[in-house]
Image (cartoon, rainbow, N blue to C red; front, side, top):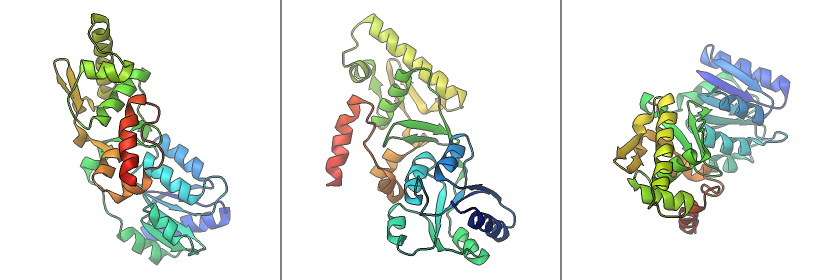
Length: 264
């Protein structure tokens, strides 16, 4: 089990680490004095099972960290460790999985960890897609690198269509705001589709694509997507969907407007 501990007070951070190791019988515990540093580690592939985090910290607060963590690594569990009870309501609004008061003791840590739900192998092997704030795609905690910006936009559009099979004309209208009625446009779309397949094949996920002649879609069941989870009523997703829906893409404005109306 990989566990992150975050606290801006180094002495308390060391005590927290020792308590967690004692409670777990020797878990791998990485310590950070800033939430931003922990997020950077996650982006580089250090995906923790659990994070124990202080709330009042300079720079990125624990609450702000929790929101960013959920977007980047939605299956990581977060337990707040604080000196104050006053943050409890706010903490559970962002769907943390535990709330402990300082100083920690091993029994409390064991009790909190005992309540954490496990994650199936199938869930671990899904592509993580973030639609809110900005569109991003992650594989095992690392950002998926798209060689072309429009290849990434094509994938975003397929996510937005929720698995529906899309024609070349629909894709051209979304990406370039014009119909695909010429050979040049058809070739551009073919290049993007092949590039997308190649990108996904590099991580062994090209099976996500459904191709039918000049039509393409995605298998939404292969994605761990904040947008899909929100539509299904997952409260973790509802509470972490902060910011506009795919704001970088003009064709996403309709979905964003529909979601804003739904919140009212």
